[in-house]
Length: 341
Image (tube, rainbow, N blue to C red; front, side, top):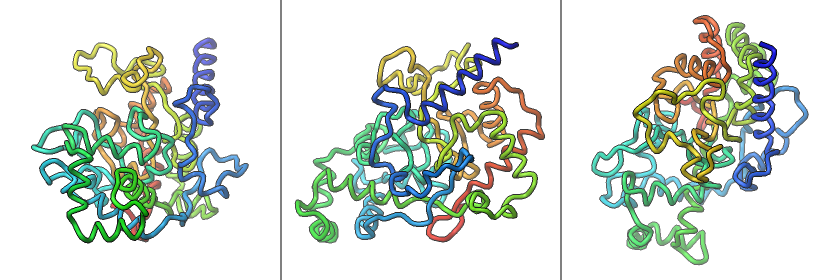
């Protein structure tokens, strides 16, 4: 028992150090363009492992507006039917709430779509963290054969043929419509999709009445059992990678493994990265089912049970699961002044 405790403690310490960016592997380093850099007042010495989202961010409103239109522009796809917003609807928590997203021709993707809300706070993009920035991320869905199946040649031709887009790009970018500028506008819009003023943010800012005692007990338990070793900071995750199945193998005995299940191994081809994924943000998690990269958890309670078992070696009871789920329900924030639904 003592050896198991020491091993678990060491694992959590390693996860925590990874979250701070203290590993030297290049892909674990926090890039300079994350939105966290825009909120230095939150990098304080608070004893809390979590911090609130800022209420405002310094973004170019004109680029946000252009990026908004590009994000919803289905003509960028090969057959003119799929936009970024098709899989990342702002009306449903920045996801489509499907196990696998549908691309052109109704084709199914290979992994559960993560939310676009608060993605600007992530240190990398995609479940496997292969994109360093939101700008880099745009290339993926635009050109993926199962998603938008487009090309930059087609996309630029489409935009150049629209007088409104021509005028907007000319006003904002000296060189007009280019892949770099398209990605810049979309990424700027995505950085505007931050969701402050959750009840938990209000609680962190001193309003203890914002959470019920049951919800506060869930937060205390969340910290006590070690969830914050991976889910910490302003985005309550999104700032490190971790193996799915630290204590017990999540994939053992499964005959239906997919390429997506291999995680970062597909990128680095290092055995240590097999089944390693970017830790997701828990912001707005109550409204973004199903959960995990493989959508294997249909409910928040099931996701809590799975994480406790495979990541922490705990078999939580029904009440404790409900406590943590209640706390997670307080992480739903506002977009444009309205609570996400």
